[in-house]
Image 1 (cartoon, rainbow, N blue to C red):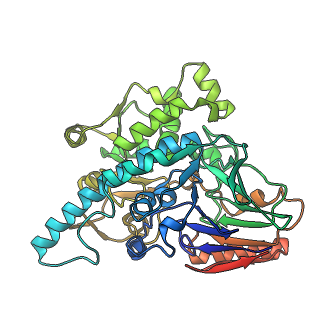
Image 2: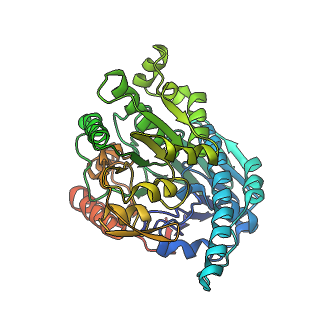
Image 3: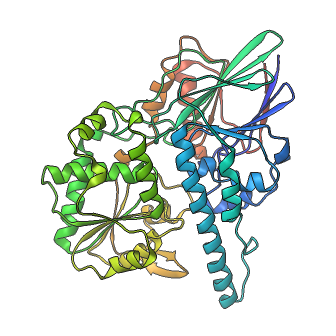
Length: 468
C-alpha cells in the first residue's frame, strides 16, 4: 500500500493551508487557503503545483481565509469538483469568499491609483487575484456534510468530519484510504480549538490514527488562564474610557468578533464596564453573526442556557451594526469613547485600517488585539512595537496604547495541542507538524518527540512524502 501527501501551504508558516493526497489515481485537496504573510503572498500568484483540473475533490476544515480563500483562483484555473464541508462552514465560506473578492478588487484599484501617483509598479499585476464572479462560481460546488457522518469519495477514499472547536462549523478531517485490502487513517487537524471556551463545543479527541497532520500555531506558547479574560477586558475598556479615547479591536469576522461580543454582553449584564456605544463595523462579521443565529445546534450548554433566558449576546441594545461605508465614516464623528470591532483581524485590509489611521497616533486611544498576528502583517508590526507604521499609504507614529489579550485565541496552545493527542491508544506511524511559524513548529515537534517518543517531522513548502 502507498499514497502520497504534498505540503503545498502552511509549511513552517501559518497561512495558505493546502495538503494534497494522492492514491488510487485520485487527488484530494485538504483545504485551499490564501497566503496572508506579506513575504509569502506571491505564492497566491504562482501556478498551482498540480493542474487544478486534475484535483477530484476539496475537503474544507473551516471557513477562515487562510483555509478557503484560494478556492476561486483554483476554480478559475480549472478545478471543477465538489467542495465538501459542514453546513456552517459552507454558509460562512460563501460570505468570506465574496468579501475577499470585493476587497481584492478594491485593493487592486487603490494600488493601481497609488502606484500611478508614485510612478512605480508593485511585484504583481495591479489586478485582483479573482473577482466577485469568480467567487460566485465556487458557491454551487459546496456539498454540506453533517459531523460524524462518513462520506464515500470513490476509489477507496472515505472522509468523516469531527468537531474541532475552533470556529463555528470547524472540523478535524479523518481521511481513510483503502488499497489492496488495507486501510490507513489520516487525521488532518485543521485548526484545533480550545476546551471550555464560550459558544462552541470542545474539540474531538481521537483514539486511533496511522498518520496525523496537525497545526502548531501556538506550539511554543501557553495562553494562560482564561478565567480572568473578562476582568482584563473590563480594565482595558475602563482605562481607555477614563483617558477619553476609543477602543479599536481588530477582529476576525468569524468567531472572534462573536466571542468579543459575548464577553461584552456579560460585562454589561454585570455592570463592570460603562454602557458605551459599540460598533460592529464589518459587513462580513454582521453576516457571519446571522449565520451563528441559524446554527444553535453547534452551541455549547452555556450558550444554550443564555438563549433560553433570552440573553443572546447577539442582541445587545447598544451594539450598532454598521453595514455601509457612510455609517462607518460617521463613527469618527461620535463624541466620547466608543468600542469599534472591525476587520480584518491582522489589519491586512478592511475597515479597521481607517479606524487605525484615525486613532493610532492618539495617546488616549487603545488598539486591542484579540487574535494571532502573523509575521509580516500590519497587526504584527504594531504588536511588536514598531514606533511608526504604514497605513493606507501614510507613515503614522504609534502613540496609542497597544494591548493584546491572548486568552481570546481560538487556537489551542502547546499544552492543549498535547491534550488533543492524548486520546490516542497507540502511537501513530508519523506526525507532521504544520501551520506554525518555523520556530513554533520545530519546538512543538521536539516536545512531541521528547514527551511521546513518536516519529515527528516538520515539512517544508512543497515537500512530498510517500507513505504506506
